[in-house]
Length: 312
Length: 262
Image 1 (tube, rainbow over the protein chains, first blue to last red):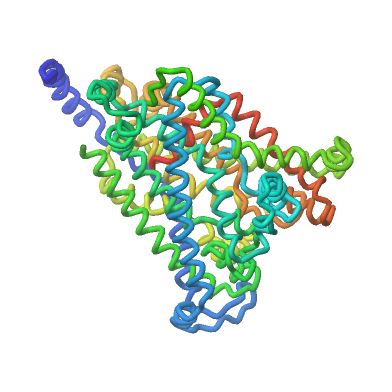
Image 2: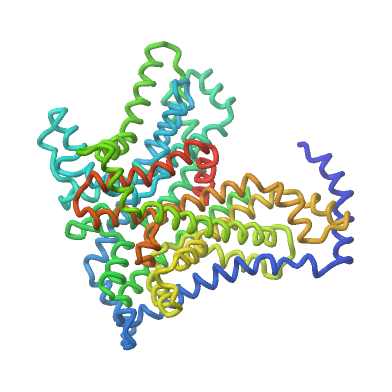
C-alpha cells in the first residue's frame, strides 16, 4: 500500500552502495574475523564436550582412575532396563505439562486483569515477578521449611480446619513431586505474566471494540479475541518450559534431593547423582546423550518456529 | 481486558487480583519470619561474623562480570558479522552455534570435570566462567543478530562512502544504536550467571572460591540444622537481587522477556 516511496529511494541508493565498496575494499567486508572468536569459543567448548560425552558413554569409568573399560553400548542397554531412568523421564514429561498449564492459566489471567482498570498495578506486578529473579538455590531452604511438618502451609491448612490434609509434604513420595512443581510455578508465573501482558498490548483495540459492540461478554472476548491473539507468546512459552523441564535440577536437588524413593528424580538430578556422586561417569554420559537428543529436537523445533516468524 | 462498569465488579476484580497475588508473597514472608525467629536480628549478626559472606559475594561479582564481558563482546561482534558482513557459508556457522542454544549444562559436567582436572582449572572461577559464557553466547548472538537486521544497511553504506572502515562502522554507527538489545543481553546474562548453581556446585570446592548460590549449603554445614541462621543467610543473598530488580524493573522484565522468546 505504501511501498511506492521506498521503491524510488532504494532504487536510487542501492546500486551506488552495492558497486562502490565491492570495487574499493573487497577484503575488508569479510565478516569471518568478526564471528570467529565467539564461534570458536562456543563450538570448541560445547562440541568438544558433546563429543567427549559420546565417547565416555561407551566406557565403564569413574572419571579419575587411568583404567577405563570399553563397554560399547553396555551403558545404554543398562539404561533402558533402569526403572529410575524411566521414572525420571516420566517426571520430566509430567512436570512440563503441569507447570506449563498452570503458569499459562495464571499468567494469562493475571495479565488480563492487569490490562483492566485496577489499582496498584506496579505493586502487584513486582510481587509476582520477584520470584523470577531470585535464585532457586537461595529459596530452597525457605521451601523446605514452607512444606515442612511445622511449616507455613500446614499451619494455614490447620487454620482453615483442613487438619486432615496437613502432613510433611516433601517426605511423602506422593506429594513431593507436586510440591516441586508448585515451587516452579511460583517462580516462573511472573515471566508468563510479563509476556502475556506484552502480547495483549499488541492486540488491536478495534478488535476489542468490535467484540464489545457485538455485546460479547468479558469471558467470550477473552476466549475468542484475546487468547488467539496471544498465540505467539503461548507457543514460545511452551518451548521455553519444555527446555526448562529438561534442565530441571536446582529445585529437586536442593529441596528433595530427588527423593523420597526417587519420586522427584529428574534427568538432571539423576545424571548428577550417577556421574558426580557415585562416579559412574560412563553411565551418566549415556543418560546425558539421551537428554542431548531431546534438547536438540527442541532446538530444531524452535528454529523452525523462528524461521516461520521471519517468513511471515 | 475486563470491562468493569459497576463498582461491584470493580471491587470483585480487585479482590481476585489480590487473592491471586498473595500466594506469591507467602514464601517471602516465611523466609523473613524464619530469619528473625528465635533471636531476631542476632541471627544476621552470627551469619555476618562467620566472615564468609563478603567472599561469596565478591566471587559472584567476579563471576558475573566476567561472563557478561565475554558474552557482550562475543555477541556484539559476531552478530555484526552475521548480520552486516560477508561470510562464506554464514548460515552454517550460525546453525552450528544455535544447536548449543538449548543445551542443558548438566551434559557438560562429565567431560569438563575430566578436562578441567587435567588442565588444573578445577576449583577455579574460570571453570565456571567458561562454560557459563559458552552456554549464554548462542542466544545472545541470536538476539543481537535479529536486532542488527533491523538496522538499515543504508546507514553503513553512508558511513562507508564517508571513508569509514569496518571497525569504525561498528564503533560509530552500530554500537550507539544497540543499547536496548545490549541492556537486555547484560541483564539476562547477569541473572543467569548470578543465579547459576549446578556448575559452581561441581567445580568450586574451596570455600574461598565459592559463590552466593552455595551460601545456604555452606551454612547448613556450619550451623547443622539451625534453620534461622540458614534463612538469615538466604535473606542476605536475596536482598541485593530484589533491590536490583526494583530499581531497574523495566530492564529486568525486558531482559527476561527477550530471553523467553527463543
